[in-house]
Amino acid sequence: MKYFITLISYLLQQQTAQLPFPKKYKDCDIKDTCIYCGDIHAMYTKNITSKIQRSLDHGAAKWMSTSGRIFYEINVDSTGHSCVLSIKDEVHMSDLTENVRRCINNLWDWTPAMLAGHPINSTVILELYFIGDAASVKFIKPEETH
Image 1 (cartoon, rainbow, N blue to C red):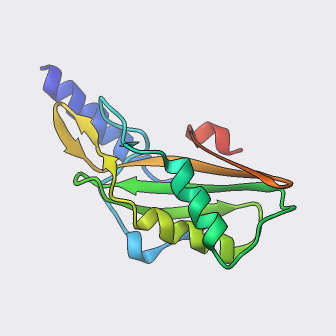
Image 2 (cartoon, rainbow, N blue to C red):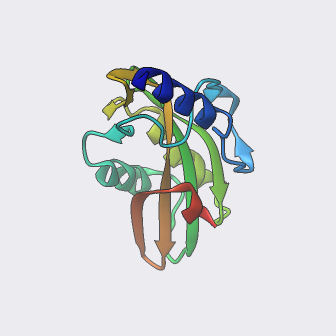
């Protein structure tokens, strides 16, 4: 019975899986995923801030004196591979946005979400916040994107 209730809960979450971020990517077209679902959410196992910072520092786009946020809806599949499903870009620097998207798509150090002891596809939301010469990276809940 517990497994049945968990399964029903998972299926209901599936129906509201994707955020309406305006920029979507066809190279990450995952159908069976949901936002922050499972008994245990998907997590990056290492320091994602250092990976993103390295990508920012070595990318062609310069972000100094930039203010705003970029939200990345990241799918983490059941094998621990990530890809960006959609983006909400308030900075409007496509080179920067694409550079970070490529970085995220190449990260393999994820622990997938777990449901009833089994790995599942799930999405998480990463916020990249720029203010002046500083940038911060953190995972946020869907309601924090407004």
